[in-house]
Image (tube, rainbow, N blue to C red; front, side, top):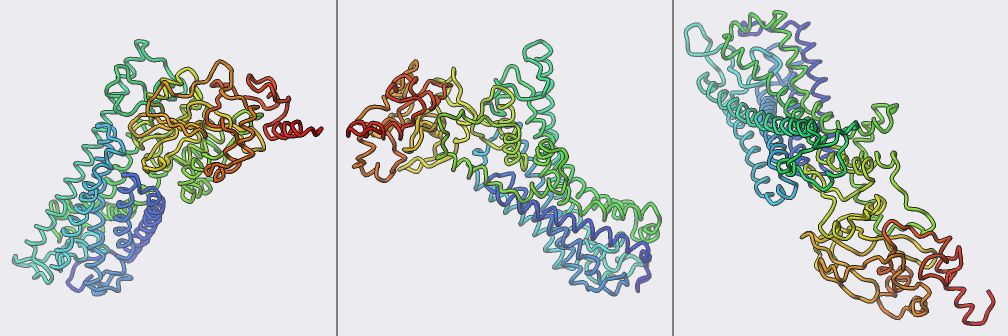
Length: 610
């Protein structure tokens, strides 16, 4: 019994609540910390920035819940309570602040899914509105802070009469008031407390309704597409897919195509979008519903005196146990939603792998390794006497895992998976939520008959456009021959795709520049002839006497003057062991590479017998 005469939970009832609440709060802190660690490295994406802020809100709430049993005023007489009203107010402030801030952010996450799926927004659509995003973050933060700052100042945060080890909006002493038989309130009036309580939960309810409405709209949109897909398939408009993969014809589409297409195809990416949106909302709903139930029971159905009598009964005690078990677990559940797709990819790769190893890989893997590998692949070469390596299943799945740490990268993973399973066609990934763009107008015009291999597309990356600094995307159009003086090697051509959809072609050492979409000047592969003879003496002389400044700077990587303009028919990979059989290279001896050919010509011109 407390000093003011109200019933408390017994030690046998109270201590399990403290233990369970501490465990749940610790798990939530760990989960939110992992999301912070992973989402910070992908903060260039809108969804990851929202999840980063959501994790901060959850960490504030979970930390306060963990500290709460010790912040309770010691005058109440609960085990382990060593605080006072100041510590109770501080802990209660962060609990309610984290709850409201998290509710606002969950509404924004649901709105993000709605705009991405239903309205077909892509990442650049959000980027153009970066100021609006910043203003929204500031608004929801100040709203949550302000709604809890004033109750803290006016001493409205006190130990809760129903859940004794929780400081929240409550009167003190319990059941205080101005009516006859009630104790006078020591810290705040009941009228002011009721006003702030209603405002507090009104804000939470409004943002919960927004989140629920956006999530339902996403589900309805995806469900409608699936129904239309089923109807088209039943009439034979679409081929049925036994492996549930994306048809090869769907490459290059975006989510907006699903609205515009007259025959939408079943899209597993959309289903994953819908699943992620629903899961994030359910995690938030679990956090929101328990305080809401408590407020309804205490403020609407029961008086404070009735709460004191009933809270030790088994049924009412079970509600308190559920509160401390499930309410603090928001960050813990969000972690599994955030990593769900990537864990699935790892499990498909190695079903026997332990969960500990899988999650360690998910958390600590280098998320920028793919960008680094693409940057390095720009200079990578493949010997002519070796066929280009096609991505094996293990390499492909590992590539998928590096891209699917969250939903924001799942679209890239599924698109590349479909490319390998379908027609062995790979492409540069696009937006996080829209399906990736794979082809451009220039690419489809020049190479519709002969698509480049997946190995060629590994070199596709974002890179600066030389002098003006504009961003261009390197897109392989044909396959060239490159030499470093030791062996003939395969490399990508110098065709680039600008942001406006056009193409620019950089020629070899002759310095010629070809304009955007200039079809007449595009290097065209012949019917089996190499555009320049590698035995041309002027080429070898130019290799030996590098008088040009650019050639001296580039060194041996320049090679012959026909490097960038030398092409082979698309799909044909020259074999160095049959160099003598190549058209236009009749001067080569079988098995001879360029360096050996050059040395043989030098010896022949000097009269030496090699």
